[in-house]
Image: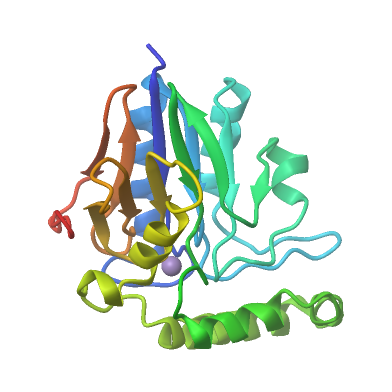
Length: 256
Ligand SMILES: [Mn+2]
């Protein structure tokens, strides 16, 4: 029965980490094979690619196993939603046109089985993240995007890979889970709850699997973690939201 909603983020394909990008891509496809039978929807919540740029007539080499798998899921009628992260902001029309996968650049509200979900990559939200907010304003600039298009792709994508490593240094998104007042996304959720009602906040970007009960006692902030080490993902089964791990030796959940 297709009654589960799946969420994952931060695959960072294109960069080698604990596992190489090629091994990780195959693992992600195995995960998608394993969830396909009961998946009602799939949300890929940003930084799927470590760097990406779409030109008028061409896209970066590689990732064909993942793209083929996503195409197959879409052809079977499973909705897939894609969010840009800080590393793959320059995704444009290709996913919509080729796969029927919409791209979201900002958090969206979704009602699923009567519960309210706010879903987004989580970059640049909350009080901090200043270095990153500067890079984001540069990358979101239309003139910069248009100028970049005129570079030869070998040069342009090389530059992107360089900036992608820089961006990770600025965002320092792999530091340990701090006290709540230091966690920008916890702060964002607490502030956001003052003006509206949300049951689940689903974010990536933090690179730590987090399951954190917010101070109103009923809302939850979930961070999906990443796939360079933990291979964590979120699943909503109609009653509860869980964090799970796929073929992983790093199974720690923070904030609980
Ligand atoms: Mn990331």
